[in-house]
Length: 111
Length: 115
Image (cartoon, rainbow over all chains, first blue to last red; front, top):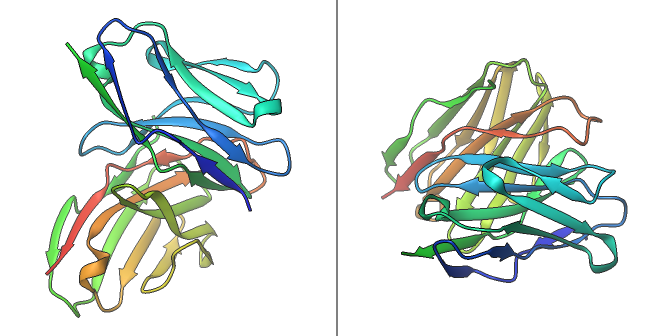
């Protein structure tokens, strides 16, 4: 069955440090993949998406993600985090026009 | 910008009450969705609609129904609310079925507490 796994429930990094959030997927065909961010009490905002082509995808707020078919992964990265990046991050997969989400990774930033 | 509006941000209802959660989108999107979000469980799809009066069950439809009488409006109905339906409910919309790469846009969520 199609699924999305985010292995890390919580991640803590220091402000200014680099960040990588992990996402693994299970899907029979070429997946459409997304990363969303949710600030407390808010809806979800799209950070970036992968449909095809270049496997390194640039998004908003300085985020990027790399699609690796051989590892079934779509990890999110940022070279230097800011305190405002503290939020919950969701990886998602498009399955027959329905979006399936991972359980999320909550990012904490140390000053 | 696409706008998905959930009219009620915070609701408190009693067990057994009928509850309506309303969602309106302003971009003429065919697809509309209702998700439920719970800590540690992420977002789970309740129902999906790909056209007026058309609907499909998602992963957790039990205890819920939906209504889509107009293209821009998608309602989630809890026929008899129970305490285990206390949750955050997120509505979303996107372009047509078949455009699998299309982005899904979310409302800000409705916090429902059933007491």
